[in-house]
Image (tube, rainbow, N blue to C red):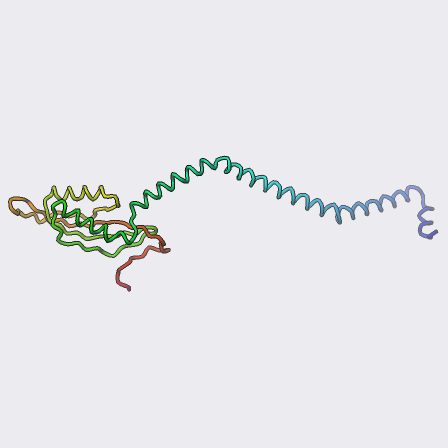
Amino acid sequence: MNSRAEKVLNLPGYQRAIIVLIIMAIIAAGFYFLLYQTQLEQHNNLIAKRDKAQVKLQKNQKIANNLAVYRAEYEKMQVKLNEALGELPLEKEIPGLLVSIGDLARDKGLEVLRFKPSSEVVKGFYAEVPVALKLAGSYHQAAAFFDSVSKMERIVNIQGLTLGGAKDVNGKTTLGIDCSAITFRFVENPPDKPVKRGGKKK
């Protein structure tokens, strides 16, 4: 028999019990730190992933349950967007729109003395397209023209209106009418910053 083992066996009972307890503690510590702790961390990670997946699943389930509502809201927004874009013509439609403004003035009996489109100003997803107008006609003809402009399918704003230079022509009072007609167009690829197109480069 090994001499060390004999010494242990010859020790008093309480000392042998203490040695056994120490050995068991070392084994238990080794099991905990080498095996159990690693398994416990992996277990906790799996639980955390499961809880995260459950939260995501609940959100997705909520969306799925309300999918019909979201789809209806999306369709409503799409209709409103199309209506809004319908009031903002594309660049290729602008010349025809400007011509229609001049034609509308003539239809109301106004004389178009000046019709001068200015440089457009890009402001995000839309651009302002101003036109300087100098007209001649009666007050009622001007009012009818402005009323018709306000009812156009496309957005056209009248700004900077001035009336003056009243003259008596064939027994009728004719006014000089200066204003700007501002229409807008849709910008398909808006730049990062507002820019002015058609102006002189500095």
